[in-house]
Picture 1 (cartoon, one colour):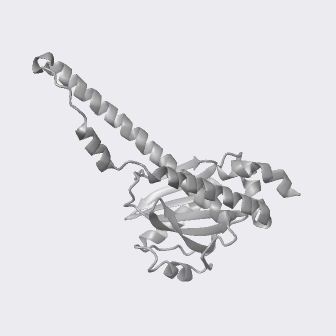
Picture 2: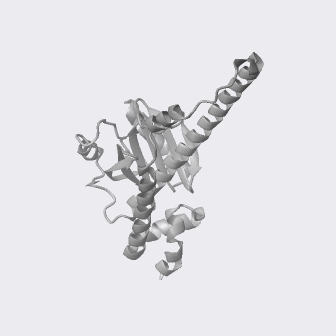
Amino acid sequence: MACDTWRDKIDAYADAELPAGEMRAVGEHLPSCPSCTADLLSRVQLKRAVMTAGKRFSPSLDLRQRVQKGLPMENKPVWLWGWAPKLAAAAALVVIAFLLLRVWSAYQQTQTYAELADLHVATLASATPVDVVSSDRHTVKPWFQGRLPFTFNLPELGDSPFTLEGGRMSYLGQAPGAQLIYRIGNHRISVFIFQNRMERRLASSDDRSRRLTFNVEAWTEGDLRYFVFGDADPNDIHKLSELLKIAARS
């Protein structure tokens, strides 16, 4: 059976660590195998639970500042310091702070794409991948009204190779957003839309990349942040992104 071939690779698929060809093969196998789908969904849910538990007791910025203020200050005679050492120390601190900011920003970017990968995989593994099932954008878009604190436009697909399957509510951290599912051939693509006023720092420029074996295109349009996520061909990801950009500007 096909599931016997892939059962030992479910964990690697959930972490998006398989080669691209095997990722596609498992993705095509899942809809026809309830057993593998259930195994995958349980693993993704466990990952998200562990991630949530790890963030639950993170110290707040206010707590960090209060602890730092309570630390004893080392008193040294002023004459031990000249202007040159002070300036050098200040410059070093600025450089260190800049590097730490870059590292922290890159870490947040990585965490964001890892969470989106989990959401995408969990959706495809679910028996009910969408909450509103329709290929009509005029049915899917109104479903989100009253559920989200923002609105968005969906493209007219026309003669494009894409088909809208529906949408569902999604959460990145604690920020609510929309997840739309499009199909092209045997591939499903997730389109995530969130407000750009999230706590985590995200790059404001367009981003076309390959993350965790998935192809991703991300950009900011007005107050909204878009992520197009899937294992489809990068050109197909880009074509769908362009349709979404045109719809957002209309």
